[in-house]
Image (cartoon, rainbow, N blue to C red; front, side, top):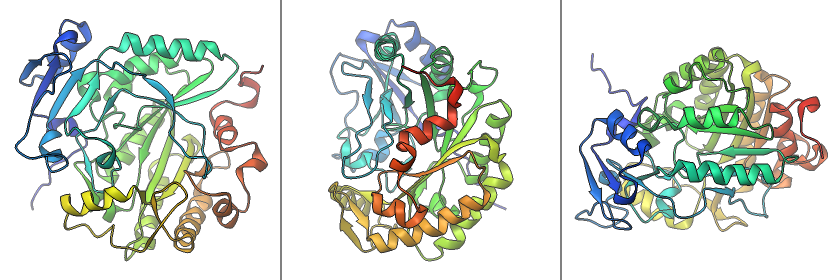
Length: 380
């Protein structure tokens, strides 16, 4: 019997580390180099770390083997780039780097980025100072903050150890919750941390067929759920993101299998929230995806341009997807788990769930209540 390679730790795909000269002497940089044990080289400030024979995006596969330790000269902390046309959860993004060693056919970063390598920012003192200023300026506001917008939160954690730094930082912040979202199963650094209930560990989930065909170098469903089970034992709240939901032959049985395994593996009381979002993408991504992954069929469906300029399934098709999966989740989830849509219209909320978020304050208010009991929420 052939044994398949496990990609529960996708950082093992890396082959070389490039270090921007101005951060070479940072203790954190040296820690990463020591843990990685990979060949490394120094790059002059603001120079490209590596060049390839082909242009972007054809060089993405090779670029994902190269990690660039560099300085972030821009902002670390920003509101999530949602759109006003759809219901947004008022999330905030902590930008710790760009790109990741996994290769998902539908990854929207392919259409956003213009560099193929993986960047990780090592000037973390500046990052924490920026966070301090933002959180301390609004002590009565609740912040839900994630690092998984432009990279995977844990895919590089064996090398960077960033999760330990962030979990311990957020444990001391009364008005903030950190979400670490991943498709890996790299959780070793999360053990024995005093997280104080201020970190939620989250996994992107899909049907087994989609995970196997369209999420290259990612952990299997079994590996992700086992990691989630262990994190629940360590006292962490969990979250799961069924995003993007993909319409393909047999999707009903595929998503039922994932949801059955989810609730067989993880105590439902540990799940803070579950999000749903159907496949959507910038038009540019279709051309990139078809070129890079000619065997994939996910872009060969009927799509319409949404209010945000992204291609989406027709509303009727999205509603069919959502109703089926929402029903399966609602039957199994704990009463306190918030099931919500990511970037959907009020009409879809009403059709599928029977209400709109405004009736409960907002999506943000619904999510805040799952991690901050009413008596412990900051008040003006």
